[in-house]
Amino acid sequence: MPDQQDITSDIALVRLAQKGEMRAFEELVGRHRDKVYARALSMMRNEDEALDLSQDAWVKGWQRLGQFQGDSSFVTWMTRIVINLCLDQLRKLKRKRAESLEAMEEDSGGIERHLEVVMPNPTAGLELSELRRRIDRALGLLSHEHRTVLILHEFEQMEYKEIARQMGCSVGTVMSRLFYARRRMASLLAGLKREKLE
Image 1 (spheres, rainbow, N blue to C red):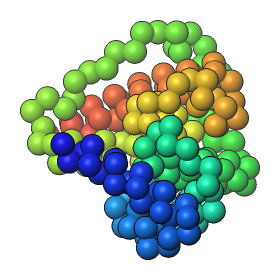
Image 2: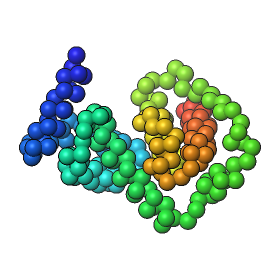
Image 3: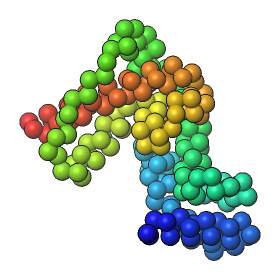
């Protein structure tokens, strides 16, 4: 099984790198830099910022390599490092920006946040690449808070409590943002499908 072999060789490379073997670490970077960069890009929506943050993550990974215990795969560990750096950066950007209308609308959300989420199926019959492009475009239209919570929950499989801790908010806020993000994504994807048909 090649996956098992990759995991095993990752662990072997980590052990060598922990002993100071820079070439072993460079091999790990070569194997996983695309995934780490892709996660940063999906959160930041800016290629330069994503590149800077993914490079910072590799520096931090090297500095903290002694702390890697192997409880998760190396790439999962690195992905968590880049996610934390992205969250820190997003928090800094948020402090610099005035509260957006969308955030105020979310906070006053009222009864609509308790309604069942109805997800239309706007993607039936789409080519996979077209679907990916639409999802990526729709993600780009979400606020960074909604996009982040959606990525952490749906792609990183993080629990509400862990997301709340990472984002510095309550579990209720995480649930509210996730509800809003899913509903907004469904609406955006349906809109993008109509746009394509016209």
